[in-house]
Amino acid sequence: MNTQTARQRGGSSPLLLFGLLLLVGLGATVWWVARHAGAPAGPVDPVWDREACAHCRMHVSEPGFAAQLHTPDGEVLFFDDPGCLFAYLDEHPALHPTHMWFHHVREPRWIPADRVCFVRVSPTPMGYGLGAVDRPEPGSLTLEQARERVRNPERARRETDRAEDRP
Image (cartoon, rainbow, N blue to C red):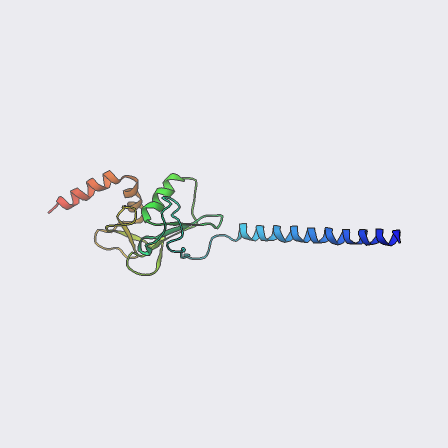
């Protein structure tokens, strides 16, 4: 009887070890897939009124001013104002996004960074005064001009004042 009991205990030990190895292997596989899946192929809608801006921590609630960037690790960061995205990039110079998307200010769609222009609008969620469009309009700014406007708001205000003073 003692020999049979010892075999039963020993018999469950390899099974337990196999189950533990299987579980560890499955966990490692899930971790690897999540880590190497990369950024989504296109824009992702945030959970409106629930997702926090990666820069100012306010809720992303106005679709017409939302923006997002995708990191090389596959993370999607949301912003409640295009200016917040620009400020975030300036604060994180080592970050090289794989994609950036800006929500059209007047239409329910996203615009990729390589096709975006910005118009001056007011008010905006964080007061940067920028709205994304996909075609140049009179007085619109390129991506770099809009980013510079956020970086140097006083200079941008002086340039706007000078332009308005012209006949």
